[in-house]
Length: 344
Image 1: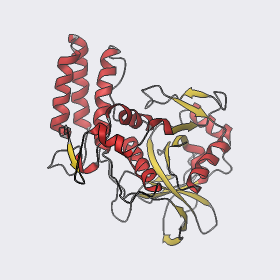
Image 2 (image 1 turned 180 degrees about the vertical axis):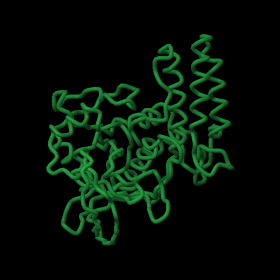
Image 3 (image 1 turned 30 degrees about the horizontal axis):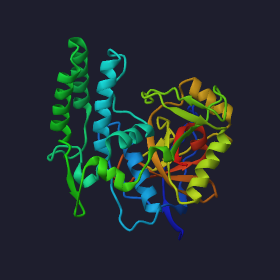
Image 4 (image 1 turned 135 degrees about the horizontal axis):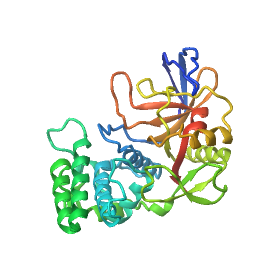
């Protein structure tokens, strides 16, 4: 892979957890490796980064096999199906489960396995007149319907109303569609791409559970209560580096609420070095590392001082001079990663 260098001048005020001010920096980045990937999309006013990151990951995995055609998957089809699964879970739990935007990588893979997937051109998931996705009102209405379903003990009737609402707000799902001259359903299209949920694994690194075992990661978006394999921090990062070195990309799940994360400036820095297992455990247990965002790691880079960075696609999209790509320092990755998802 050819290397390419470009300058990105920033004025980023670094703030540690203690809020101690750091010096402003201007950086010059050199991209060392970049894996095959598709252009950035915008999730709009939704918390559906998980669907965008996983669609992007699968698109890259397909490109890595050397197939001549590039497929763009529909994140919003998967989001829609997830809403219906949450509607059912809310009902059967008597209202104890929650209907929310958020999800994790396994949420996408579950829909892929159970319902299939659509290409982006077959389902964009918004009204024709809409300029961007916005699910704030939709979620309120879904929650209201789910509560009424529990109150009246009528899942089938209120689920039909939920489907009608999703059809109105996001568009009806086609029973079949033409894609490059061939007719598919969501199921047959997914089968044609040969993606399998079993080919992927979710990794994390926390010391309140034994290493080299699986546990249910205790974050709000893990509403499906799925297990993650627990590795020491160094081993977790090694797994990510190995994947990237072989042309395979990684979905990153972590905290972007820090003052040292700036999507507009395309930068995530962490002022403490080195970051230890104990430091990240402390921040997790004190709710300083929170369940915020998922992005897609597509490569590696370094700055003018030789410091290592990961290159990520961010589904906040493009705006102004920001091209949707973000540089995350190695220390930020080590401090604020909750989990990663990658191909086995």
